[in-house]
Image: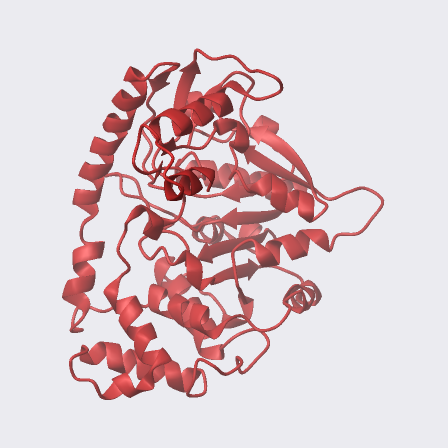
Length: 405
């Protein structure tokens, strides 16, 4: 913001604009919105467009269905405090399809304005003589410590094995919050790793909180997203009937990237009914209708026979192009930072596109006056080159083991 103000005031800098490569906001980086999503929402906001034949027929039909589900206007409150029943049902059907027949119930779905809001309230509600602790994988999302601190929850870190592409080290686990695929590391757990975590949770009687908001962002050939719930139920009743699991998905990430519409859902597995009622009671006011409708569109994209499918497929069908571009960008940033002063880079083979890269760097700067070396480097890069990157020290890291986000 300070640099933007300098530009407005005519103050000369060695660059013309700030390039932010640390943001997890896809549209901020120039990604175009999916036309089907925006067209359906536009019709819902202005129903007169239902009669506009310039819009594809499936767009108008979907908008008509969604308007009927929300009572005829997006300006109405949701028909229940917990959200629109139609959206709950659609989410449950999507999860069942995604997990290849593992059933999901609309009663197990909790809709929230954002992926963090309802979880924070759940953690904040804990009582007892000892504080609530959440064992959190390091590196973690850089906003997580602030969120947990606001909730009065103690962050208890456990380190992932970078030498094994950010694998889980069970010896460090005590209480688990899993981010999957990994944020910011971009790692994707394989089935055996997920099974190990589930067995540990079953043995210790722990609740698993699994952040799966990047499930649509796995582009590396030979790697695929497998949900914790699917693995849990394939492990048999010994685990599927006892392990408590909350999985999270959001509008903000992946191909859709609609951060500003504020919509997320939780699926709650094996929770005591009384606790489930309590969890839903943490919701203050009904979630925004527009965000709910956008989620319904996200999980029910155009089908092959629909008029909008070809346009949508041009976005979804670019996995090979995205993989090629991703490979190019990885090496571009590697050489970019390699030839800059102050650091040397090491590349990991990461299959998930989140921010861009989580680069390991060998810093030639040293910490000064309580400021970590990677933070000093980020400040220098912003001031001298106009490039905004995130310091790995914000995500938690082993001492003097530096990364850039």
